[in-house]
Image 1: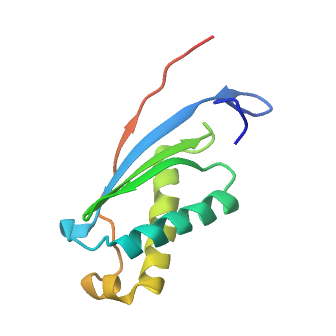
Image 2 (image 1 turned 30 degrees about the vertical axis):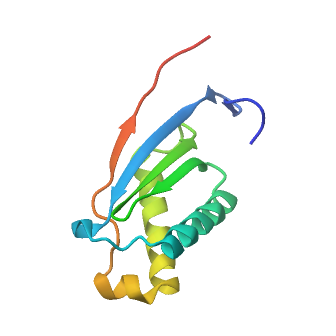
Amino acid sequence: MSDSIYIHNSHNVSNLVYHFVCPTKYRRIVITENVDKSLKQICEGIELRYDWITFLEIGADKDHVHFLVQSTPDYSPTKIIGTIKSITAKRIFAEHPEVRNSYGEEIFGAAVFLCRAWGAT
């Protein structure tokens, strides 16, 4: 990321930051240190693959994860968190079978997010 907090595109300049909280399904305690490390590595890969997602911070507790994500106005918060949840769940299930045994097809329940926007000149 450049020194600017703003993302410069051809027709807009933005600083959209979203705070997503993703509880595990049924709030089961499945996020161990190893799962946390894998999650952060997976998110690094997501950043490389999708240039419109930048992780500013990732924090995990035993039954939920916080993502602080910067993106552009071209993508809705729902699209952003949907992409993150889908990729991380598939990869965590593949890398950590013990987590998959606790769940069916999804690790995360419904995402809760804070979306704040304001103007500055």
